[in-house]
Length: 305
Length: 265
Image (cartoon, rainbow over all chains, first blue to last red; front, side, top):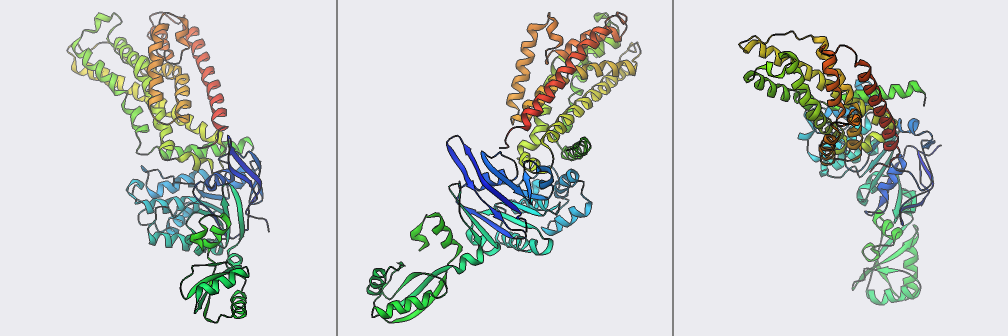
């Protein structure tokens, strides 16, 4: 299967600042790909490079198997996007805003209706966009991106400004799209919990470099923490640490041990027994995306633990 | 991309740009501003005898309105209107969304230029209409009946020449407006350009200087069209307009190429 997005050693520098360094992205078709990074990590620059809004200093981009910029027009005809703040013309109604794209692509009117209905704006479509709330504007921008029924949707922080209900709706929409219309969704965000609930694959960008890229399911099954209850936690911790285990969150009668794989809890129990400690409680805490993120980026290690 | 596909993209982009003009000042200003010189001249002529100008009442009225327009209000309108047209995208950060579509960038910019030209032409149609209304109003209100016919063909021809002479000016201001957001730069350059144009009053260069070309063409064309000097100077006017038009075309191509090659911020 051709990846929906593929970059090869993609780089972009601004003077001496390397915004994106040798990026090798591979976004599978029909996936929801969460593109994570701290503010300033290079997410928006990457999206600009993908869409041809900025030229790379080195490397190449292919969208839906079509090289950019050689076949930019053919590729972008099949791509919907939302980059940074939504582009809404406040003097036009919601329907007219979507109709701008309808005219550009000579789309049938039903695409406008369908896009407005998908984001729940049919009833408000006759109102001027300047009267919309922030969340409604965000949803309208999504309707504009969805109007051409794209094969690939590239979204930069699409839940910015949305209330919890709006976030929930967008999340459900993004989850649904690959199933219902075969659309691949590439969504950048710094809200880890949001991506965790939506994405099938994640890529983590740190200081312009891709430090992790894999299916979310593999990531969360890779390891985690075992919370251990013992009589004398500090002594048990000392014993485990001499054996090379990593511990954290030590209290009087419990602590956490970092483990790899599903058999981690049993291994911890065996190690404790060998050191003469009896565990009265063992529970596996699966690794969250947040743990994976901070482990991959090497930041906030304490908080992650 | 084939020429046919390019042209198809261009018309679709133009249709989208026309839609974006709805309820904007970019659409209202060119239609309303031409009323200003007409009103000024109407009230002036209501009090003054047209004989003092020596051309006859109708040519004097036409000349007065078009002179105010060509030498000052037209260039100011060009600057303001271009800023408003480009501002639709600047203010809403629309460039990135436009360039993230499959439209070639040249199409996006040329469509904006054409929108500006269409609005510029509409403002001159409104100018011709306001001149006709002014003369009609003077005929109805002045005691002497404001003698003399107003030939619609001559009026439209006169205004069209001034309109065409302003295309170079319009192209320069549109290029500035597409590149830089806001009114300040464009209006500043328009005022500076008009001020510097005074230095060229006696020079042949005023025919080709963007901010004085409309006024220069107005001066050249008025006696021709109203039959004061026969048709002897027609070739001169055509040459001036040809050079101005060519300069506008070269500016348009160069600016489109320059703007299209830039990264989108």
